[in-house]
Image 1 (cartoon, each protein chain N blue to C red):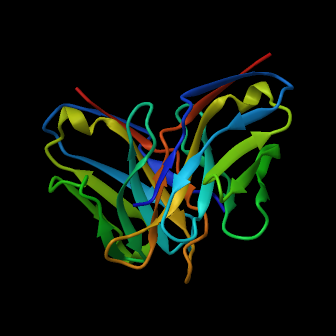
Image 2: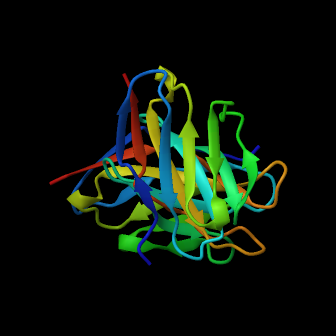
Length: 117
Length: 116
């Protein structure tokens, strides 16, 4: 079964410092991996995806993620965090459906990021 | 592109009542998904439509839940005889995908259901 794990419930970082949010995956076959961000009382906003190619993927709002096949990880990074980056971050993996062509997203439990001024 | 729209944003109802939520996907997106998110957790898949056909339902979707997508446009999710455990955020997402399923799903802002 496809799954992702986010080992940290919360990450605290000072504004201007690098931000890393960890994600590890367990999949059969090639993984299609995604990062989403969720602000309070809002839906999920797509940040970036890894399908194939370069292991460093660049996304929205200055975020990037590094795919590491040997460590089965897909960590989200931002070189310089902003207070406005404080939110809930979800890693997800594309998961084939049982009986139909198509996919669903299987999400990790989420990591709350708090960026302090 | 006006994004995925969900209505209502909030719904408060008494246990045992029926509720219906609506989702308007991004126009021309052929795939539509419903997820449920409880507080502090990641979203969990409920059901999936390709155009008007409902192709997959999660085991989370009991007989009290029904979803439709007439004409492959908007979708509705109905919960009959609501229970306390139905309290959650219900998220709708859509994508346009042909062949390999690697396009991102775009989410609406959800409907938060509270059962009294």
